[in-house]
Amino acid sequence: MTDSELPSIQLSEFTQRQLDSDVIDFSAGQPGPRLLPLDMVAAGAAHRFTGAAADPYILQYGTVQGYSSFRHCLAAFLSDATQHKVDPDELLITAGVSHGLDLACRLLASPGDAVLVEAPTYFLAGDILRQAGLTLVPVPTCDEGLDVDALEVMLQQQQYPRPKLLYTIPIHNNPAGTTIPLAKRQQLLRLAHKHDFTIVADEVYQLLSFPGSREPPPPLKVVEQQMLQQGLLDGLASSSSSSQNANGSSVSNGAGGTSGSQPQGGERVVSMGSFSKIMAPGMRLGWMEAAPSLLQQLCRDGVLNSGGSIAPLASGIAHSCLELGLLQQHLHQVIRPSLAAGCAAVCEALRREVPRCSFQQPLGGYFVWVQLPQEVCAEELLQLAEAKHRVRFVPGRACQGLRHMARLSFSFYRPDELQQGVARLAAALDDYLAGERAEH
Image 1 (spheres, helix red, strand yellow):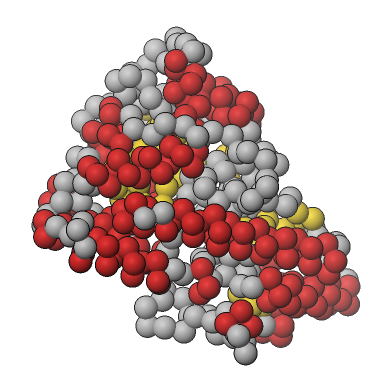
Image 2: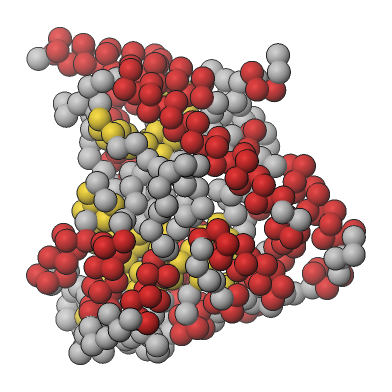
């Protein structure tokens, strides 16, 4: 049996989740074993720690922002990948998007502040937001991602405390697979400037568009820069310099100003990215990109100032993988084609095996968001599917979605395994609906 025929399993002391060959688990939103580039990481480590690039000071406490030559290398990579210039001085190295989100919640907002969150959303983001003491305000979504028109109505009606942050996954959304188009990004930015909130853009899937798919819109920070240069955001800032909580009292932010005060320069976007999806989750390495006025607040974090750069060794390995061209090759020749094949396999199987379901086929990312028949409760279906048909998924309500929705990941398994998983899901749905008819 060749490596390509071996079942996709994950049974190791190193892994957060144990996945055996008995169950096909569509809830596994992580790269499969064939996508983990151990040889590339070993080559990067050898180059950084034993070759001409070796420097013992990489083992010392590092600079808060991350060491300069790595940020320059990362900025060049991102500039090439997105076709938009990235300034290395506007990058902060993080331990991944989750770490970046935690920084944004603690340093750009204060306990009691409101944060707008698209619904559905990444199902573990809510814990990070709530643990920072923030009040979550759900915003509806549509086929284009965040429903910016609905958000505008919400802000006009002022039914909620003025928001301090808005958290969005604007491209290849988790779980919905949607991408906010350019016109709606511009509308969203106008709202952020008018109502004085900061957009925290989780753009972890920005580099994961499928080969041959249409060009995605620019990252939100790029769109903001273009609008600022064209004067399209002039005069939109609210006249109020402070936010109010539900009791009408002013709330100050974590940087010593008032919640809702506009950053110097007017920038309103913090972008977050990660090596977890383009290299490996175990790197625990990512970045935040923000204007100096916002970056200065993020760099005041006590943990970063105490311990220095959050991941100097991982930064060194990633730096070498970029310098040697290994990561670019892995991304374009392995990651993106594999994800595209997995997505195609799931979508084809859904059309064939489960015609009663509907979905929007994504153009990148990790997930398909499936609408089951209206009468289905996804949590109940999951119990039946796991117990009798050996297949799992994430039910919609776990993502703050509707009860008859389900998130399917196509990143972990081979295409043939994914199709087998959809067939199992179809059998589980048939059994569920038969039981419903018998009861009614």
